[in-house]
Image (cartoon, rainbow over all chains, first blue to last red; front, top):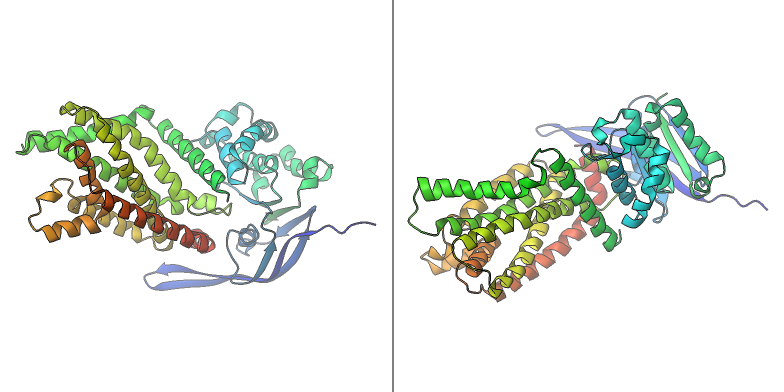
Length: 200
Length: 258
C-alpha cells in the first residue's frame, strides 16, 4: 500500500496587513495578502507566479517563519529547517565565498564542525572555482546566487524557499535544482519541498 | 537555538566581522593597538602639554577612566544598531535576535584586549608594577561585560522599533562621559550624599572608580557594591533575553518594513 506523503508546510486562511510610517504622524496601511490557504507535502515542488508587488516575497517570508500573519496560521513543525534564498541578501561582501558559506551553514542550523565539513561540497556544487576564496564583493549576481543555493543544498535544509534567485544563474546551473530533486539522490529523499517564486 | 550553538555562532561571526574589518585597512589588525595609542597621545597633548593640568599623574588618571568608558560606549553604540544593520539576514532566516548585539559586543571584546594592554603599559610607565592586586580587575571586567550586554540588548531592541533611539543613545553616551568622573575625580565631590548617589545610580562611575582604586591606589573597591551591580545586571540580562525572544517576529516585521 502506498503511503501518503506527510504535509510539511501549510497555510490556513492567512492574511497579512502592514503599517509603515510615511511621514510625521502619517501612516500607510496595506493588505499584502488575504485568504491564502494551501498544503504542501514532502517531495512536492511548488512555483508561485505573479506580477510585481502582488505579495510573493511576503508569502515566502511568512512560510520561512520570519514574520507572523495578521490572522490565520502557518503550520510547520518546529524541527523543520527552512531557508529562504533572496537575491543579494545575507552575504558579507568583504568576506570570501568560503567564509560566507561557513556562516550561512551555521545560521541554517549546522554546528561549526558540520559546517566546516560541508565547505568542500559547497565549493564543488557552486562551481565557483578559484573565486570561492575571493571576497563576495567581486562576485556577479549569478555567482552570489550559486553560492547561496549551494549552501542551502549542502546544509540539507528541509524546506528551501527561493525568491527569484535562480533567475540570474546560467542555463546549466538553473537545471541543477531539478536534477538534485528528481534523480533520486539522497538529497531529494530528505528534502520536502522546493518553493520557487517568479514574476515570469 | 541550543546555547552552545548560539555562542559558537556568536564567536565565529564576531571573528569573521573582525577579519572583514581588518581587510578594509592597509594596517589591518595593527589598528587595534594604534587606535588606543593615538587616544592616549591626544590626551597627553591636550591635558598634559596644552592645558598643563596641575596633577602630575593626570594622563594616567584620564586613561584609567577613558579606556573602560570607551569599551562601554563603543560596544553599546554599535550593538544598538546591530539588528537594523543585519536587515539582509533577518530577511532570510528566522534566528534569535539577541545574536546580533552579542556579535557586536564580542567583536568589541576581542579588540578590548589590545586596548587594555595599552592601559597597563601606561600604568607601568608611571612606575606601577603588575601585582596580585590587579587580579581584582577581573570581577570588574566581568560585571562591565555583563552591563555592556544588557545595555546593548536594550538599545538594539529600542532602535529596531524606533530609529530615533539612535540619537537618544548618542546623547546618553555624552551625558555618561561627563558625569562618570572620567576627567575629574568622583571622590572629589564635597557632598557625600551626592557622591554616593552618583556611584549608586551611575554604574559606569562606580566601575571607573574601581579601575582606579586597583591600578592607582593599590586598594580594593567596594565588593558588596560590585556584587549588587552584578546581580542587577544578571536580572536585566535574563529579562532582555525574554523580551527579545517574545518579540522576535515583531522585530523582524519592523526591521523589514523600516
